Image (cartoon, rainbow, N blue to C red; front, side, top):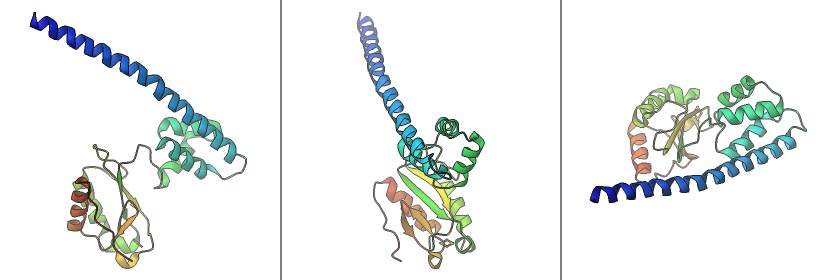
Length: 193
Ligand code: FES
């Protein structure tokens, strides 16, 4: 009898969950349609002038949060460019993301001055600590790891930029502290320069 009640309750829960999911689905679909409508307007606006692909991609990323394969194909079709060309641009520029970014972004400078001061070893440490490859986001969506070219702070090499904050003369120990702080919801101030 007790078992029967439990089964009935779990069936009711499943029905509730399904009903809730049904309600959420059209909302998500509507949001997606609205985003594509917004993108259409952007494409219409920028397509009037040549050489505006980067601007279109940037706006598309603002709208969708990243440039997924689906969004890239859509832009390719609407701008009459091959998908391979769109994808080539997206993967070339470090400002573009093909999957949603993490809450915090680590950009490690791999420019010459930073490279000479051990930036590559730091990149390897970051990959180990975060368990991701360059360009990827951690499973908990907390960190995205990227590399950047010279940001003009070579005197502080090697340089790590966290959410736009410059951390100069970065070391493996410093990086570990920064990661631990952000995991606890705290922040380590960047270097003044
Ligand atoms: S090379 Fe890294 S800041 Fe210039």
